[in-house]
Length: 399
Length: 143
Image (cartoon, rainbow over all chains, first blue to last red; front, side):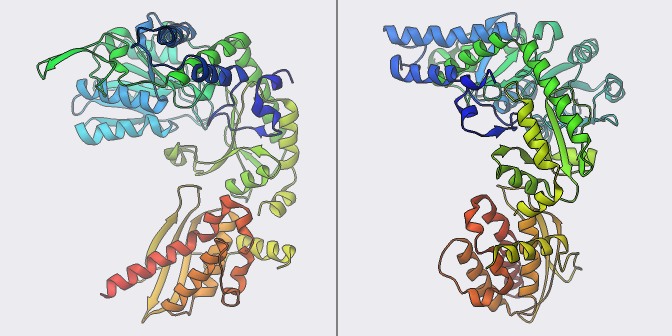
């Protein structure tokens, strides 16, 4: 397959179906990181010497790439973080904690990742806001109608994933945002599972905030992005203060912070990671996000058609819009299925996939999850399906 | 141990675990789970006069965890808490590839090769962590 040459991990013989957790890195990303450490390893925004200037240009160049990648209006709207979790926590702590009042309501859903639930729960505990769940329909999808029913005049925020990590449904963010904005409601999007898999256009959807991670889109671990509309980011009270984010300070009353985006990036950032992330963006652009989306949809359809023919397999989400399929083998614990597949070098995830509250909705606590990426192949799916089709073999070999 | 026999005993205990169920309020209840996997078992232990009178368990767990719990209940019911703790120590030594007394472990010897699968060691020892917690609880209640 054509992508195999680009990814060292794809040449190890491993079949990797846990792309919702993290993705493999192409050689160009690994090389970019290596190059920074071997050829121009200096800090950013500091030195008056050549290699530091080179770091500045490379680091800030990635900000421009991300801006274009999600079609943000200004480069100052791109803040580098450690990942989606940190991005969401910052949005909640630096912005919403300051503007929400006791009794204000935040709407989320049962299929959100823990990182889009717990920051809200924490805020709720500390400041008396209410976190309410928007019910999902029978196919576990989120409908605008159900959102409308949950909105009250106290609703101030809708905070949801564009694609959920267990069910794999794609939400109509544009329509939801239009409806929300007409009522003065902010929209925060957890893009961890969507930005890597489909075209993102924050101006078209008009969302207020977006959080996503580099490592789920061929980039390195420890890098993520917080996108926010400029006028909202201006209101952020920095979570971290220190080097790199201040203009000057003489006394407690005379502290001046830098302008966006550096104001929200205190301390030495993950420079190597950000630079390598730029290579990941180049790589994804080369393949094309629409192309990636359609490859995954085809693979997913193929997988579901095959799994549906196996009578001892119960698919939790038979109609995913993306490359995420959750299922169980009748009578066998999800983890045992994962251990069995591991014996054949196939990586799948067993568990609740950090969406712990989902069990209340689908009545199943743990599932086996296959999450695809564009570099997966039909041959790999065939191998998986063949191994899953023989229940006696699973029972025999799972221990 | 013969690998086929070992597998058969584990699967037997997984498919038809003994002492599955929930205890009453006289029992000490402990939850066992570990951060590295998704097993989640509740244990109910009835201790009277330093003797383990009964153990029940319930929850969602993998084959190794479930079988290990089932076997543990069979082995420990009727034992004094001191003998139970000796049993636990021996079992944990076996899992950690240290010297242990295989004589006393009886059916629990089926896990003597689990060290080969590092990710399942915690599954096998999960119920034993629970029983130790329960015994500690029993002792602190007595004091």
